[in-house]
Each structure stands twice: as C-alpha cells, then as structure tokens.
Image (tube, rainbow, N blue to C red; front, top):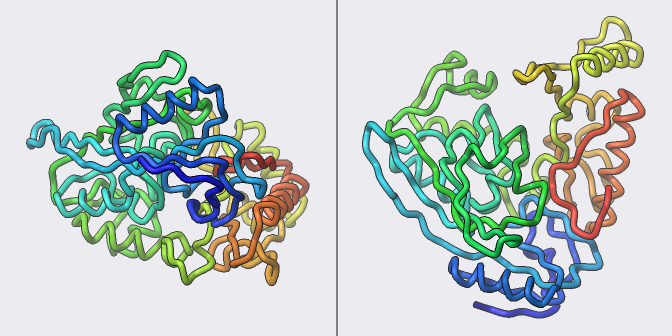
Length: 357
C-alpha cells in the first residue's frame, strides 16, 4: 500500500484534468482495498474510488478527502469446458483492454467487440460498458463488492446488478466498491454475431455473421482509432472520456416530438433522426446525430483549450492545456444547444466530482 499527499488527479484520468487529492492510497490487493475503504469510512471522511480514470472528471479544486487508487491485478480461470464455457474472475484493477486481449488469445468469445475501451475491469459493470452491439451485462456472471453500508463482502449475481443501457445499481450509489468480476465466456474461435453495420461492412460479412476473434478485435480497434477512441498520448483527440453524452432514451411520444422538431428546424425534406426500439416501449436515438445537427461540428471549440474531437463529435477533448472548467463549459454549451434545437436534454456519461453540468 502506498500513501501520497496533494497528488494531482489530472495524471490519473484520461481527460487529464483535475486538481489534487488531499490524500491518495494506492492498493494492490483485495484486502488492501477493503481495509483502505473501511479506514476512510471509520474516520467519516470523503472517499473517491479511482482506477483507470477513463470515465471521470474531477474539479480543478481537486478532492478534499481520500482517493483510493485501485491497482489490484489478477485473472483466474475458475473453470473452462465446452459445455459451461470459461468462467474467468478478473480483479477490479486489471486493465480492461489487456483482459480483452487475453480473451481473444485464449479463445474466450463474448467481449471482443469491447476492444480498445480504456479503463479498468472493475469499472465495466458500473457503466454496463458497451460498444458495437456488445455490453458487459451479456457476459457478467457475478460481481464481488465491498458493501460500505453493511460492512461486508457481497457476491451479486448479474440479475442483482440492475443492468440497463449504460447503467447499473453500482452507478446510482457509492455504497458498493467492486473487488472483482466473473465473466462467463464461450469457448470458441469465432466472435459473437457481428451486430454493428459498419463493423460488418469492414469485415466483409453480413450483420449477424461470426468471424475469427482476432479479426473482430482488429476491426473494432480500427473503427475506434478512426474516431479517436483508442488512447494515444500524442493524439489530443484521445484526451477525453470517450463519449461524453449517452444516447437519449425517449418515450415514443417524445421521439415523435423530436421528429417534428427536426422537420421544423432542418426542413421537411431533412432525414429523420435515427431511432431504435429498445424493447421496453422506448426509442434510443443518437446523441452524436443531434449534436451535429444542432450545429456543433467536429473540432468545435478550436483553437481553444477544450474542443469536440476532430474525429468524433461525441467526445469532449483536452487539447493539452484545458482545465476542468474549460471542459465543463464546452459540454454545457453543447448540451444547451441540442436542447434548444431539438428539445432533448443530453445526459453526461462520465462521473463528475466536484463539478456540475
């Protein structure tokens, strides 16, 4: 266990903004993680649990409390057979893309479309991380957590996690600290069915077909690189939290109202907004589509310190000298512009600490 004081948090997040933590404790084992959290709770001090920092924006003033930096490691195969698949337990601090790489190499199918996503494995159930037609909810068997309220370790089955689009019971509360995650993956050399049209086109297959796992991973990485969504210290388009806004989930009535607003603003011959039924009577539209049609182009904000990515309008980026206030101001402008144009209020995907949108 390592203890640091006045540690700048900008260096611990992919957005690379944020002031200092009054105190940071770096933990490398599950026991150290639980002990560190208990110590802070017993002292009744503010706590922030941090791992990869890929979905976090911390205020310029920093954090007046203790940050527990999760640096735990370990991937263990609990069982692996053709009938039951591969049951693999991954420590919360393990690099997510490192785990996906191993899954592809081992012939564990089910997370290949989630290649290139930055951050730690423990963060994936919190957000129900997803991309290109896959979500971690499809493969998570259980999540082991420290319950800060009950002061005990709990094992939560997937059905207890409340997984929905980019959400879970872990996201709506600071009650649970993820210790490790068990994934149930299929033992096979082929990917799960390709569900994303652009990905299928790149692979030269029809939507619904399967391809070799390595091919699926490389195609996903290529798609993400084109959008500036694979971390690269030399590329400021990747100094971000990935998608800053979630795709809006609208009632059917609200979606029809959106279609009307689009026609009024863009003209009766304009293409309608994309809409995909989510299976629960709601319609998922596209935040990026709305942002672009509201007048926010790629690179909007340049030459300022924060801008939309020059590759993808859904990412708010740090051009090298941005502060948290710069990032929040830009995101606020985009959200307000979309709401004024189309009556849809976008919701931020990253967690904001000490800052509000």
